[in-house]
Length: 102
Image 1 (tube, rainbow, N blue to C red):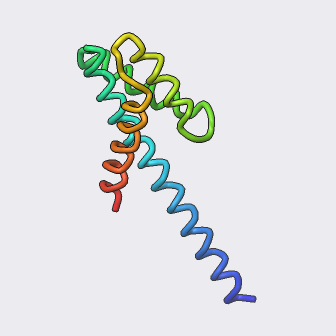
Image 2: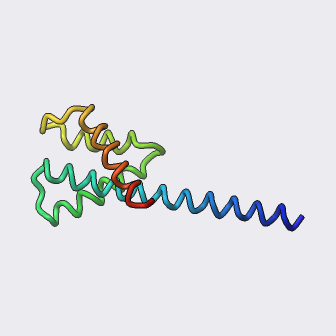
Image 3: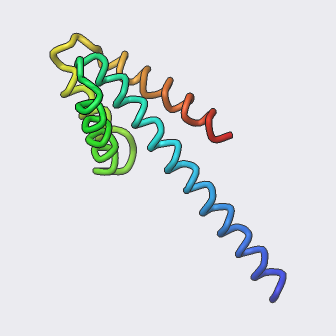
């Protein structure tokens, strides 16, 4: 039973590590999205910091990224940013964040 237990613990560690990396990538992506949207919204550095925190919190509302998308869409509604552009930026910045954790 010792080998089985070792193998199980190894899988658990690998899963935990993968989840930790995913969380970090998501948080970094959200930071970048907050910075991107802040520039469009014309925020100063203090406003930007607060806004980034609100973006991070928005992504924690539900599983997936639709909560994040809805926030960005609502916040950028007066700036003629299309849904497609927001989704494209989300993918682009997710890839950027992923590359930083490889």
